[in-house]
Length: 447
Image 1 (cartoon, rainbow, N blue to C red):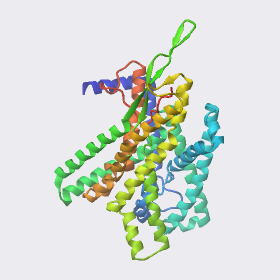
Image 2: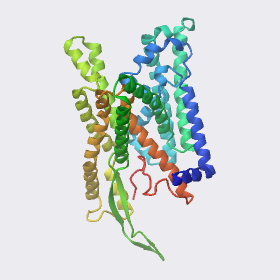
Image 3: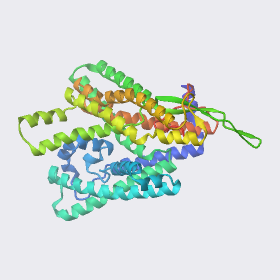
C-alpha cells in the first residue's frame, strides 16, 4: 500500500503527466454528458419502449459501444462505431489495394492521406447509419416523435446531428490521443462499457439478496469475475519471443550490430475483432429468416440464433471466433515483410536461413500460438452465455467475458503502459516491481 501511494504521488508530481490525465478525464466527462442529451424532435419521456428494444441483438452490441447513447436516442447515439468501421475498411484496403499499400509506405505524408480518407468514409458511413436510425426510431417509438417538428425536418436534423455527433466523438478521441494519455478511441469505448458496470453490480446484488442465493452467492460470482479477468490479462499479455541475432559490422572505428533481440509474437494478435465479427455474423441468419419465413422450423432456428444460452448457439459461435481469429491474424500479420526487414538489417534467426525460410518459420510459430489463443478467446466469448444460464443477471453476465471484458482489460493495460512509460522515462519506479506492463498495442519489433 505504501508503494502504491508513493507511485500515485510520483504520477501527480510530473506536470506533463498530470495535465494529460486531467485533460483525458475532462474530455471523457464531455463525452458522457453528451450521451444524455436527447435528439431534437423527440420526447424523452416516451422513449421507454425504444430503450428496451434497442438493447437486444446486434443493436445491443451497438448500444454497448455507444455507452448506452443508442438506447437513449442521444446526439452521440452512433458513438464512435462509424469511425471504427471506416478504419477497418481502410485497413483492409491497405492490404488489398496497391494504391493504399503505397500510401502506407510513404511515412507521415501517406498516413495523413489515409487519415483523410478514413474521415471522409466516416462521414458517409455515419450519414447512412443515421438515416437507418431515423427509420428505426419511427418504427419502434413513433409516440416519442413530436408531431409539430415535421417528418422531413426530423430526418434532416437527426441525420445532421448524428453525423456531427460522431465526428465530435472522433475529435474527442484524437484529442485524448494527442493531449491526453493516448488510445483515445479505445478509452471512449471503454468508458461507455465501464459506465454500465456499477448499475449491473447493483442489480445483481439486489437480485441475489431478494431472489435467493444471498450475499454469499454474490461474492462467489465476484470471485469468478476476478478469476476470468486474470485469465484475460494473461491472454492479452501472452507473447512468444523469437530470438534474432544481428551480424557484426565495423564502420570506421565503430561497431554496429552483434547483439541479440527478440520478436514478441502475441498469442492474441487479433484482439477483440474476432468476437465482434462472430457476433455480427450470428445475428444475420435469425434476422434474414425472421423477415423471410414464418413457420415452426424457422421459429426454432431463430430461437437458436437469438438465445446465447443455447448449446448450439455457443458451439457455432465458438467455431466462428476460432475461424475469424485465424482470418484476422492473417490479415494484420505479414511474416514475409518481417523476414525482409530482418534481412535488410543483417538480422537472422539462429538455425534458420534468411528469406523465405525465415518467413515460413515465423508463420509456423504464429500458427501454433494462435490456435490456443483462438480457443481461449472462443471460451471467453461464450462465457457470458454460461453465466446467464447459471442465473446471473443479463446486464452483469455480459461482463463475464465477451467483448465487454476483453475491451476493458485491453484498454486498461494500454493506459497503464502509457503511464508507466512516462514514469520510467523520468527515472521513477514503474507500476509493478515484477516487470513492465505489456499492453495489447505493443507490436512486434521490426528488426
